Amino acid sequence: MNALARAVRAMKSDLEVHLLSVFSVGVAFVCLVTALLVVVNVQHVQNRWQQLGKLSVYLQNNVAQDRVAELERALRATEGVSAVRFVSKQAARRELVNEHNDETLAALPDEAFPASLEIDMADTTPLDVRERVADQLRPLPGVEGVETYAHWSSKMTSVFSGGITAALALTLLVLGAVISVVSSTVRMVLQKRHAEVEVLKLVGATDGYVRGPFIIEGAVQGTFGALFALCVVGALFAFLRGTFETYLTTLLGVRISFLPWTMSAGLLLVGATLGAGAAYVSLRKHLVVS
Image (cartoon, rainbow, N blue to C red; front, top):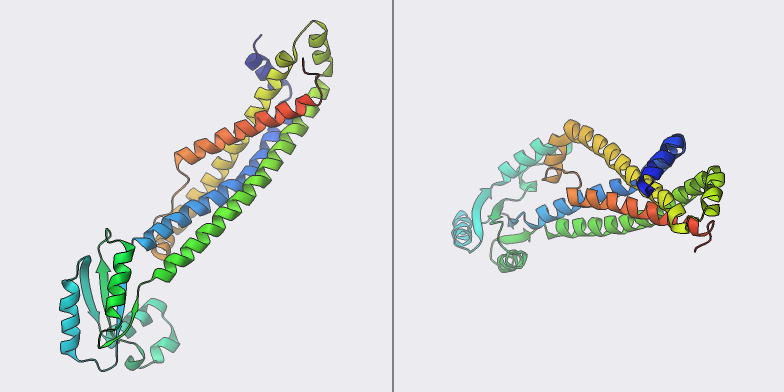
């Protein structure tokens, strides 16, 4: 009887123990899958902000209309600029009040809101070109300041870096949890099959023959634990996206997405490898290697 068939028969006989192990491994993987999901979507937001291509040129008070028109013409002729829109003080106040619905903002006069030129850059325009355009605009007469929104991209980069660090830390925790759970399960099952193992050793079975089914069982526990985590997090993700997708898309500027299939497949492979490795290491302490 080959190792796979013996492993299937053994798992059926100890089904409750294996299900408990899969659940425990799955709980550990839930944390890792959630962290990776956050990292993936933060990266999408970061890429979106980097490609946003928006500049706001705030104008000085009482700037002449002919000067504004001159700036508009110059900007429309600038390479990489796709659109220019003038926003008056009144329009800026109206847009901000309507967006935030704040009584304090509504009580402010028009003079508290600077007029601006809103510039849309082409998505293919490199970030350094946008910064160069902003640097050229800042010293011009009539310009109070230029907002490139680069600080938002920097914040997203910081969040992304923090997410990567958290994911790495969780990976180490998951590694320890999976090794501990699978090793404990293998030792428990090995004790229950002690008589069977002794008989196999007496009739000349090698350690590899005895060890084979246990390693397969460990791989199955790790794989199904990772699959359980993907299913649980995937179901919660589908519920949250179905309920709050409109709000999240408006807030973040991108449609949130689940883990790519390559990453999901990688998690299953990691689960199988960890489970098999944990079983192998645990068995080395209880079986004499031939």
